Image (cartoon, rainbow, N blue to C red):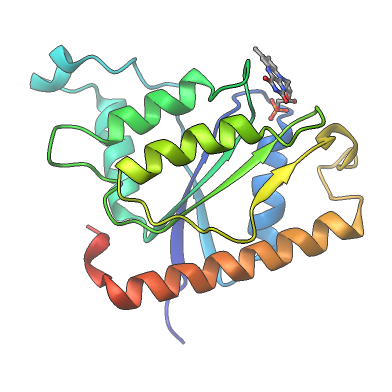
Length: 191
Ligand SMILES: Cc1cc2nc3c(=O)[nH]c(=O)nc-3n(C[C@H](O)[C@H](O)[C@H](O)COP(=O)(O)O)c2cc1C
C-alpha cells in the first residue's frame, strides 16, 4: 500500500471555535487518501527581512513543515474583503529567503469559509493571486466558497448538512487527484 500523500494545512483564523478550522477538519475526516498536517501560524513573528541572518525558530519550523509536505491546503476567512494578515504573513515567511521559496511547485487548494453570504470570494481570489506568483499549481474546479458557515456544524464540530458533507467529500477526491496528477509530472517538489 503506497504511503498517503501529506498535505500541510494553513487555517487563516486563529479563533478557538473557528468554522474555517472545523471545515478543514471535516475535509480531513472525509478524505482518508490524504494525511492532513495542521500547521501553526499564529506564533510566527511578522516577516522582516532583517531577521533572515538569524531567523526565528517559528519561521524555521514553518519552512520545514511546508518543505516536507507533498501539497498545501489553505482554508481562509475574509477580513475586510481581503486575506487575514496572519495567513499572508505565513505565505511571505515561507516564500523567503529569495530563491528558496518552500511553495514552489507544491500542488495546492483554496477553500474560503464565511459566516456571511458571499463565500469570502475576495479573500479566496486574493490568495490565488499570490499562488500564481509562488508557482503553486492550484486546484481550479470545484471552487470552494462556503457561506453561512455558523449553521453548518453541531456542538461537536460535526457537519449538519448532507449537501456540505457531499461537497467536501467530492472536493477531497478532486484535490487528491490533482495532487497525483501534478506529482506525476513534477515529483521533486517535496524536500
Ligand atoms: C476583522 C473582521 C473582518 C471581517 N470581514 C469580513 C468580510 O470582509 N467578508 C466576510 O464574508 N466576512 C467577514 N468577517 C466575518 C467572518 O466571516 C466571520 O468572522 C467568520 O466566522 C470567520 O471565520 P472563523 O469562524 O473561522 O473565524 C469579518 C470578521 C472579522 C473579525
